[in-house]
Image (cartoon, rainbow, N blue to C red; front, side, top):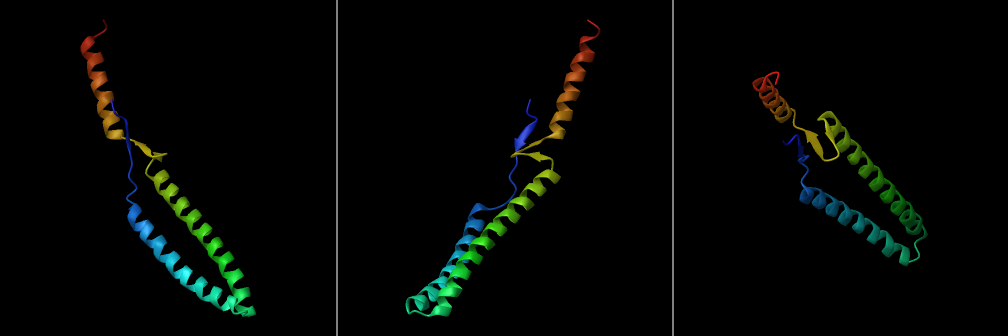
Length: 108
């Protein structure tokens, strides 16, 4: 009797990795420019570099937390616990089969 089945939330891992790689490339280019300027003793660049690194870190944490919250909410709405969901159609069919067998057995 199978009452639970693994759920695929439809998120393509490769797609997520591609987005993350692109964001890191863009951030890397910006940080690289600021770092080059900071090496030339550009005080403004040094200050902006510190701020940019902190903002990038904070932004990444916030985006990750939000993505996880949305994924959990979607799972909750679909009745998923962990990575599994109850297959109610299969459960109803199994209950029906068991009731039929009990009825056929009679009062025994």
